[in-house]
Image: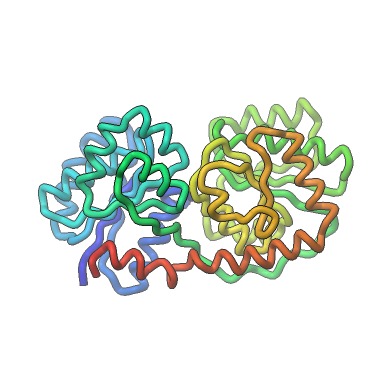
Amino acid sequence: MKRILIIGNYQPSVGGISGQIEVLYQCLQKEGIDCAIFSTKGSLLKRLLLFFKLLRTARPYDVLHVHGCSEWGFLPVVYGVIVGKIWHKRIIVTYHGGGADEYFAKRFKFVKRWLKRADAVIVLNGYLEKVFKHYNIPCVVIPNIVELNEVPQRVTHEGIRFISVRHLRPFYNIPCILQAYRQVREQYENCSLTILGQGPEREELEQLVNEQHISDVTFVGQVPNTEMMRYLSESDIMLSAPHIDNMPVSVLEAMNAGVLVISSRVGGVPYIIEEDKTGLFFTDDKVEDLAAKMIWAIEHPKERENMVQKAQKEVQKYTWKNVKSLLYKVYNF
């Protein structure tokens, strides 16, 4: 059996690309495949020195599976390709991130120089597939893996519980969620908002809540992946308002947990959610539009439940059972 080294800007228990690297590693291990994770995350000096460590580490492996995205997130691709070529390894690149089109427009020659040296390039959905085809970069679509852990029994409660599960960074647009929630509270006081995640905007967001007297908002901070399903089982509706996105696992986890997702219509999200059938969309950065969708979901519980049930069936396609045959093919197993 071939040995696989997974390379990326990995940090344990933070979700995003790191979360996918973790899930892939665990799934491969359960299959009895010899695999390991090599993280290229760190300060600039540390990242430069990590190249030489990777050069030593990668030698006994057969496949280098690199996970990258835009800007500094592309560094693992550069390192993985160079090391893979030196040791004559099979190089697989999975490209994450909803900002690929903008990044390629700025750095196309640089990006293509490295991607064309990989043996296979994976994108997560049709959205990125279109971007790559536009730039004439061959790719294959293999979606993110979702662990469909047993969903805890849903907690019975009065009112509606909203939840946000994104990092507290500008492009995730948490202020839009807070402003929309404030409008909803003016009509429906029996609701609450729980915000999971950490980031540089937390203090500013907490200040916004205090200044505008927005009631029943709880900032939880970073939550381990093992605790995520518990929070989802206690919620009714997930709110996601990013300006750019690709294939957010948090959305898939919410669908699995029986939580209705209301998201901005951006990037690859429309390839996950079918509008008005498995979830709801609002126009990016339109607070009034998001508030209107939230109110509709409150006032139409039967329709909301129908969408939730369809979403739970839809998410089955992202299980390891359905994804692994696609991955094994690019690994040349």
